[in-house]
Length: 180
Image (cartoon, rainbow, N blue to C red; front, side, top):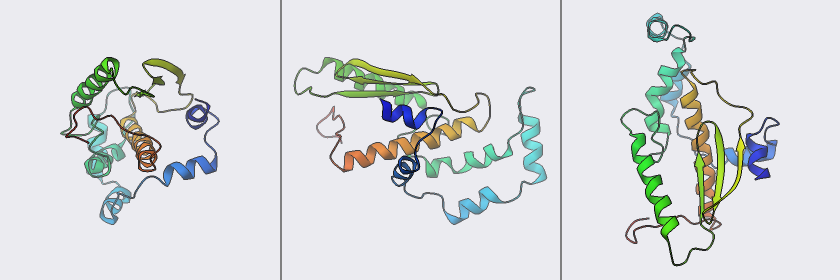
């Protein structure tokens, strides 16, 4: 738990931990996407951002640009905040996995589940909650860019988990023998 607290708490990760995390992420933004993201904002983009915002919010034309590339840079396993993806799919998968783990009778040594949301983190090991911590730093709720920044952080975390799986230090759950 102290490792994850060190990454997500206010003191921040060490340079080594940050480099190790980022080394698991493969580049996905193409030169064309980058050119689209960094070009100056047009009058139409600013106008659209101003007229589409809530009265107590600040305009963020960059959020619309990010939205246009999310489908290309965020893994298919991430479904929140991405157009044409349903978060309900992941909720259903999480429910089914939790049910499977809780009712598993054979070979259940070291079952581990991790629940992530925008506010807190908790770990479960063999069906028992193991640790809980709130983020000391984070994103401002209501900012139009916050959901996208959360997705990028989740993508890095997903890449870190995938790297550990590829090293053979962690194994996923196969509910159906014909599926990965």
